Length: 89
Image (cartoon, rainbow, N blue to C red):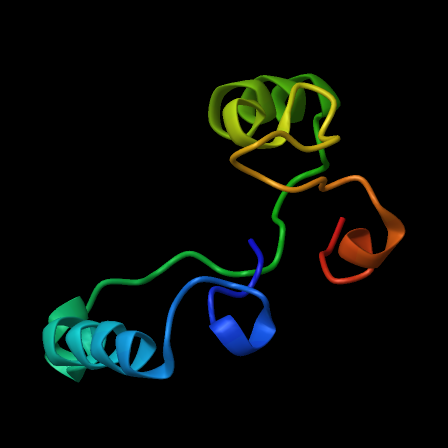
């Protein structure tokens, strides 16, 4: 997702970002919040599945970014080289 700060082209002021960050830290920034839970790894543990990816994209992404990822009124294109260079496979 793109940055939300006005200085990066988004809609939020620095004060709004500080408020959101403070709220996140105050609610979930304590070590005991996870209560010994073992969060999932950031590394993939299985081989990619294009059919599943298409289903997930259609369910969660297409309504904003379009069925082909070319962008719509609510979300920008996610198919350009600049964006793709920022994300992993």
